[in-house]
Length: 414
Image (tube, rainbow, N blue to C red):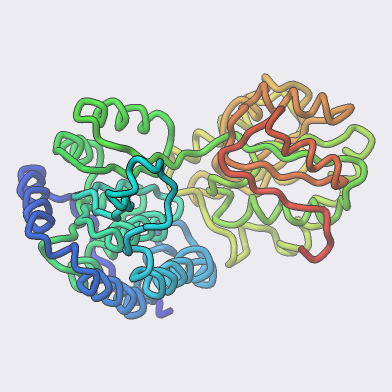
């Protein structure tokens, strides 16, 4: 990646053009051309080669927005999209076939029922700032594969990536079917005033409520991918060094701005201090010269999010046991762990969505499960470090039911 890659300055789409853009996308869908599977495959191949040609520019944009290291941009964003495209290109012709292998009452047998895969229409994709390429383009891949036309609204908080996405889409995809709208709240509001056949939103719960209320007026289906106060628990049976290493990694990639990473860790009282020692050992191994000097450590997206995370550290009643360094001028917050004694501590009540997290001791697994249900009974992920029986009990839906279960076992080398 060259350091002199030119990225255009962020520019909002004129609000008075939005209704015309949406109407064009809808007319393109109504023309029926997107129903042709070969047309969809051509668009997907064009997107593949667009991502290939724009890899260096996308790396530069992600570096500018998040200080995301080039190899991280490949691993967590660009390569993910290539994998999605490889799968869709191989499977799409099978996916679109009518499903005739279905069960139905004998009464309907003369009708030969089948399930036909039909596109929904024109869709709106509103993306986040933490993975501003992957979480905009991955839903677009699905929309293209399904035979929909689409308008993508990237986050204005990652302006460089938003502009490169716009350039890529306009240069490689059908210009009457796929569009990128850039802007902030006014532009998003104008988009939500349009009629859509599906809305796909990735972000926070507050904005999700606004979108859901607006979509309800027209009975528009909505897919929401939101965050959560994700828990982890560690029993005295766990490999503490392994648990420390894995959990620390989850809070250092993308400076912890990952919806699946843990928000807090419940550690059995007998091993709390030993676990903290292993955390600090891994911290020093990851960043021998400190995370601020590391070329592999990202930054918080903007001052607003920096201040929000910093407030959690300033108001906690707990004790910082790892990290703690901050620099607002550099949007830098070191990976930080706080030892707390109450689920009502700000470190437990709020989602950090950053490189800070809390440790809270517990006596036994039943107590840990009660704490997890009190903090957030439906988080996005759960990470368990214990015996097989302890892990299974923690996963048990009788106690705990995360919509996406991410279990990290205690098996060395996993």
